[in-house]
Image (cartoon, rainbow, N blue to C red; front, side, top):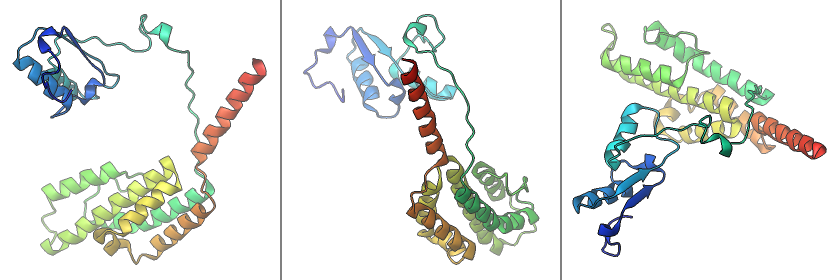
Length: 248
């Protein structure tokens, strides 16, 4: 309900049910409807439902305030009144190794990364000096610290070089994360996109290892580049339904 246009007789409303209540922020239509109803005013009960209220208390409180909620009820799948509607399930963690091509690409990415990490570490700008275990948040935090309090002995004319190093590394570690989590295709798409951007292209555009990485990715994608995780998931599903069919 974007607004009360007169087609709805608000005085006859007794209960307003809001689904997907976590969307109630800013100027979303839920918020506008509540504001207009309360301005009339009208006596009604507001019932808001959501399966994803938010991971942080301020976000949840924001929804509560916007929808004028006075009482909360929380349920999870183990609550007695929910159990009858939930199927039994077993959670099993299956570790899937990277494919050989992804392993080769990852090694080459680390070779590109290593000298830039060494440069920043030498300047005391990285606390974690193990380039194999750094993550994008580590780099972002270190860059923020540099911006707030750069080393006193670092010449001003080197600030641009340091920013470029941080920016390039953040991108490379994001590509590594995509490679390990989602496979070669998303990693390649990000690399392609970043190489079109001036700042990253200036730093990495002529890097021979980056050129080889891109070529390896293209070769892998040319014959499908199946994701090891998807292949394993397909195997598990086929086994599950084959066993179910055999026992039924």
